[in-house]
Amino acid sequence: MILKHREFFKLKSGFVDNLPKMINPKDGKIHPCFHQLGTETGRMSCSEPNLQNIPIRGEIGREIRKCFSAQEGYKFLSGDYSQMELRIAASLSGDKKMIELFKKGEDIHTLTASQIFNVSKEKVTERMREMAKTLNFGILYGMGPKSFSERKGASLEEAKEFIKKYFQNFKEIAKFAEGLIKKARKKKYAETFFGRKRFLPEINSIDPKIRAQAERIARNMPIQGTAADICKMAMVELEEKGIINKDCKLILQIHDELLFEVAEDKVKEVAGKIKEIMESIVKLKVPLKVDIKAGKNWAELELFSIKKGHHLKIKGGE
Image 1 (cartoon, rainbow, N blue to C red):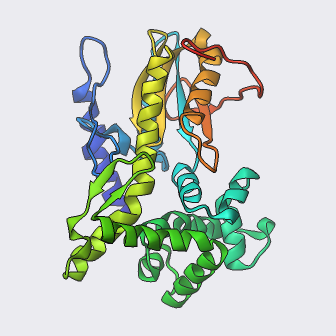
Image 2: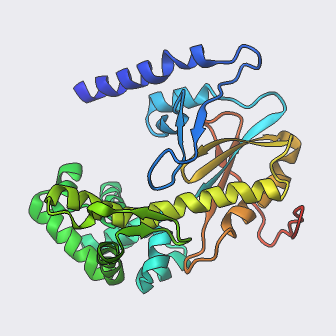
Image 3: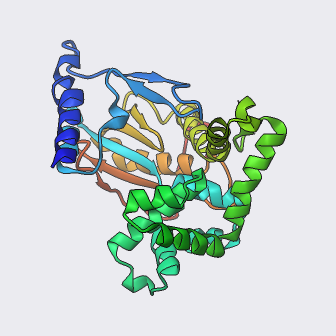
């Protein structure tokens, strides 16, 4: 009950009370500020208000998102990178098993749950999948047994066993994560796939807390930083190819997702172009996958089907 109250209070004070005051009287819109280097990994951040922080899950969060609707004659269209950071981790680590699962189009969280709980895919419950999802993302960034047990309500022994099984299944991920720390200790920086560096003078600190924080950054930066680079490159490419124009406006960036406002008669034409450009911005061992959704408001976006093999003519190339 207390946690629920805190959640509601945060949403009410942060958004429900403030959003109406931020509406521009001239156009009826909210114009947040975006910061190119708002985070140290290179992710963009947002303020006044922070629209990246409106929860997608939960009834209250959805109701707040429902307040954002496309203007007359337009629809919202979302291009969302699917499991982007895991695809990057699989590509950079060269983990053959994870790469193969992605290439087969398998649900990586269900498969992970199946392996750590020793059950068939069909018998994986929602809770099992959720625990596997926490492992898949958490282990990349140095989450240990204690942190996992606290987050998911598992015993410390269970958490240790889950992590052990995870590394038995994805051996190269474990080596990759450890290798990132060794590399950072030697070079005093971590870098993205594209060579953007984050310097880490504290990586060899004698203070274990300071050193541990630098080690987490050394694991985080190459993956989350690469994801940030890819998103920004996609935004630039969409602009340069003429996709972003008066009929297709980029209105919001939510980390791995781009949100557009598109003229209703252009949605079909633009959807395929956005998907193609976002997915082809860089070639990795695991192909990038973008889910396209469309709808009249931000809370009710539905998957938009795009025909395979549809030839796309794009300004400045094909």
